[in-house]
Image (tube, rainbow, N blue to C red; front, side, top):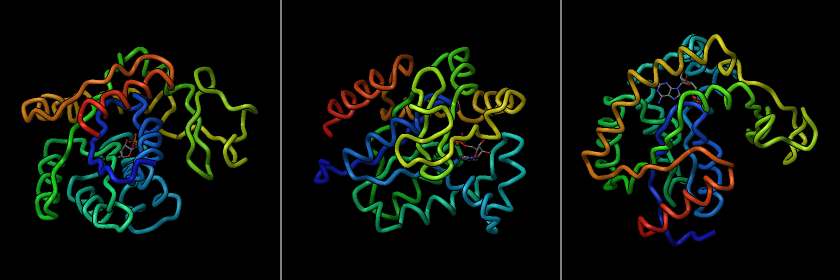
Length: 223
Ligand code: AMP
């Protein structure tokens, strides 16, 4: 772990682009915290917390949880002690309003973003990835039935937990999520490009190949 280097990065890209998988590698190396808003919301929904009850319908439909709810959640998370060594925002921001809110949160903390990694993956590849994606119910480790298979089909290599397909990775919801991405989130590519923060990562290839590109891009950004 190279903990003397603080990273403050947004991982941007469509669902299934590999953001969560790659964020885990960066966190392991840099000791930053991974703020995966989708994971936080799914956990809250499973535990029926007030946040979970608010989010459940949106999660089921594959639509976005309202910006004010998301901004409050992220502000609290970024103030957490474990974010002292920086953060990888995985799945946030997803709208221009969230990006503007994030800039305000960071400014109030005397901080800024280092850069935004945009994972570029064509729609056909995404659909294939989401259909085969499996997640450990216990530790959240991500697998793919073909591209990154566990040793035993339904068991996590890392912790022995049971592997599951996310409800919203089923075919019916995937199309809705991709449409939401195109209309509400894709405008952030241009938004961050204009601020000079965007680094494009080719998100097609094996997990290891993409990991190498991410670390190369981090190095090039002086991390
Ligand atoms: P993800 O795991 O990032 O694909 O997110 C799963 C679901 O959580 C999304 O389809 C949304 O319903 C919700 N979600 C996650 N992040 C956000 C966000 N930044 N803004 C609004 N909704 C979100």
